[in-house]
Length: 488
Picture 1 (cartoon, helix red, strand yellow):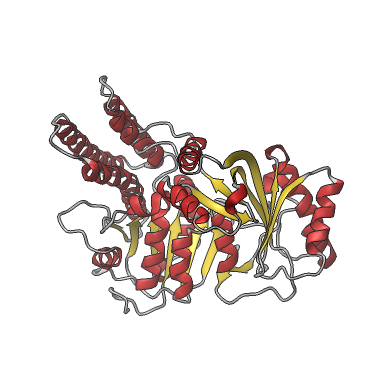
Picture 2 (picture 1 turned 60 degrees about the horizontal axis):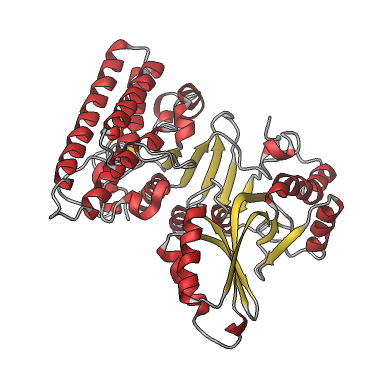
């Protein structure tokens, strides 16, 4: 598909995440402007997330589940707590404006934008609230739309402010608002094309909202990963030469906080298969749906650190395979549940697995991995305990003779583009055994891109440290790696 705007040079599509966009000065100094001047500033499209914490206030806290505006509205408390929650959003948005704008006129424009969006949200909430008082109406669809509208407000603020700040600095920043609610609901690709159709990339720097109003709803389909989907589709349909994600950390061999900043190393080069394994563990490399579109369009993805202006980051390609088999990254998920389904009469019978999967799907429980033998099926799940409990209740009704147990566990994975090295698992097991770590389970696929170790939650951090020490640090020392460490 040809680009829907005027551009005589190759362009990139770049995404700035919520924590990164909140670090305003670093983003402007190292990403948006930095050492660039004149024409060098342009031929880039930026997709931005909401400021860190803003979507939590609008919907609910991503990790704790604490209710935001939407959560309070759904609760329908008599004291109208959603109004207090919306007032908190209003205050947080104004506080962010006060923090980042030195120019009083620009701050007034930014505050007026907040006034407009908060007023729209308040009117909508009041109208839906009044409709809710009448028992004749089913509000499933209006409530879903309300959730979408609330989420959109976060991206609208950060994108509007970023474009305004660019203009304050003499750059022709253009606010591209894909979040604006209107009558028509085009497809996501059509919505992006509509927003960019009049942009001249050689003289304009578009700042695009990570939320886009489109068919099916972004939050409903992609949960909190919707901004990466917008970013990916923008890169694909405009024919970007490269897609870039700016984060506040390097994609490194392990979490530097666990293995030490001196020991962790930037990966530098890997493939989309590795990125998929990280996404499966809940790691923030790239949403799997976003990575899929880039991979299928043969667009490489670069992950860069906003604090390291001149570092090229890590390039993720479709066809890369390490020259020699090796572990590239050690990552994991601390909070997991092992759902163990045992039925003595399962041998030779069909239907058990399908029923379990149907229950997990119905309750929207994320499956990280699974294993089975003659009479036991175990699913490793990343989900709140209450959802796992609902699945168990359903299965106990369906199979009263089964024994169903749930275990709190952690998973740590060795990941690499090629792990086909003789003795690799034995070496890893020896390292863990010598450190006193008991391995509760082991998953190894024929494709040799990841090896999953199931351990007790109290052993999670030590498992990562010991595996990194055994599998990665000796290689770094042996070849005197020239890449800067994560702290460089």
